Length: 84
Image (tube, rainbow, N blue to C red; front, side, top):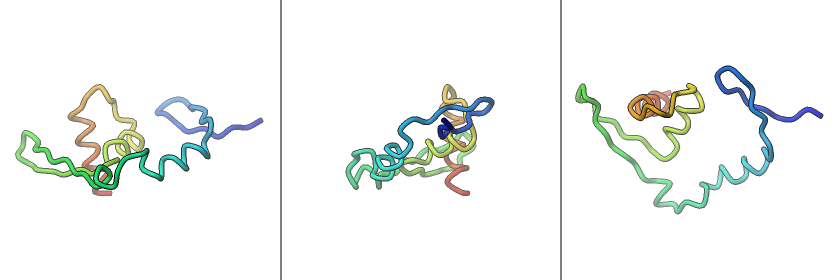
């Protein structure tokens, strides 16, 4: 039996309960509307000021396989993902 899977940099990961994840994910994971609309602002050392919204960093991690052990790279990738 073939199962859905998704790529992770250099290997494929099986996705169990894919339908459930999609249904739950698009409902905001139980967060209130105020939490979903929350924004976070930060300033890089070069003086650039940026604002990210709920989900920006997660999208960056998924789309660029960013190393989550480096928070500054995650924030930069989140800003990059938000622009595209």
